[in-house]
Image (cartoon, rainbow, N blue to C red; front, side):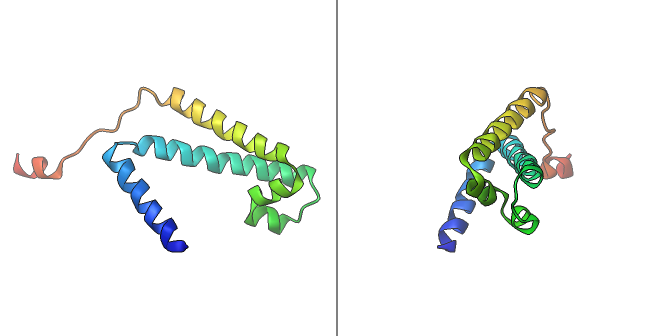
Length: 104
């Protein structure tokens, strides 16, 4: 089963590079990690779950506590994606071509 995960990871990585979606991938990943941190903090403060379980699997711990925590995760992740898309709209990475730089 892990081969399917590796294969899908390669497909998504190549797709992100071909479609020039690197910025969107980074924004989505940081929003999801940030939402997980917020969710883990809320669970640590307001639930009776063990801290080790929260650190290892915050989303599983949230699902065990109740579905509202998962909705909170999705809301915060969506909010993070939206804010990052709006605030980084004007930023563009400078393109660099090593071959062109070496021949000129």
